[in-house]
Length: 470
Image 1 (spheres, rainbow, N blue to C red):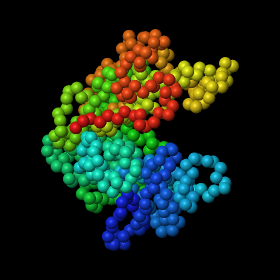
Image 2 (spheres, rainbow, N blue to C red):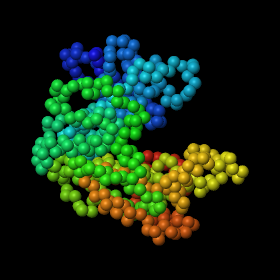
Image 3 (cartoon, one colour):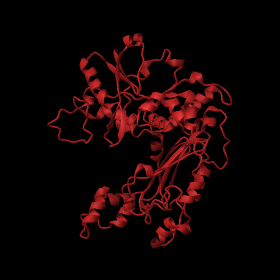
Image 4 (cartoon, one colour):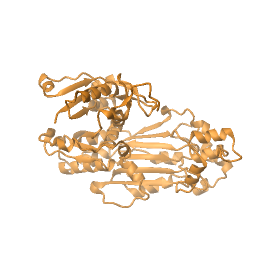
């Protein structure tokens, strides 16, 4: 089988003549482009599109391997293979259906995405999860060229690691030969890492090569697998699988890795009480995975110290108009207002949005259309478990994945951080004062999140990022 290789790097690539003779090596530069999802992302798209097409038309090669830079986000790279492209490599991100006057052609006409492989550095895995990131960490794991040359350097090391793990079909565990025994034997360290990887991405195949540096590795294990499926890949993350379970049932906790879901739709969180317990995420991960001594001992009150991944949405008492999106990776926790409102809030402020009703009005109908709300959608929503007679679709739903998590204690602490029943029973006319105006906002510094108009124009900088102190 003849294989072509595309190597992408932010800086210069230095390869000796012998390596170039052995391979069809195509060196491409990176550019900033707008992807289908509307985000400006640092990707391989421009020259990559043209090069893949050219290689396919040569009809000399059976397979193409693309090695992207370590800072690449996997989703935009995969999207490249389902985009439209023309001769100059520019696609049609707007998705216009009428392309009769253009020569846009899908790249899938020339190549099919077969497998997405993520290579994990076993030696540094625990350290990446457990670090509070500094510029030195970025240079250590990304490389100095990548850090200096890209404008897309806001993505943290640990977030990129999780993104690349959650989207992979195959995960290769590399550098296991560099692990050293200590409090935890090497075999046990490898097993712990494997268990974490399988929990983060249950659908991926985890492979641990028998010999260092992939010596005598059977490449058929990663080539021509036919494993990649875009729709399935976008749903492959462990936290999604956990949320899809109606109720989590006890399972065998291999090597201490466990997960569970917190759900509540009858009371919102009190911002001050939640802020008191939402501390020190991931501070014990280095010790738990590798057995190395952590920088500080884990305090008994740090219930989230062994959390690897947390994701979901919160209902905060002072945020009546929208959910608060939550995600944590390692020691980094981010809370930000969602870009969508609660449907119950839309109905409360625009009750006459049903265009089929005699009492409808134009403004309310426009508000319903803006969030794809209709009488039929509302009927289905009210008939589901997501709807509460008092508070509508407002709810909290959080997935936790970690090592030896004290499930019962975490659930109890989260319950205690909710408004009390007495606080919830305040008259609806007094809720804004009791739930928001009289409550200290420790997450968003008093940013109003009560009316629908409050979330118009909310930007990413309004997110609250929390990192555990070293």
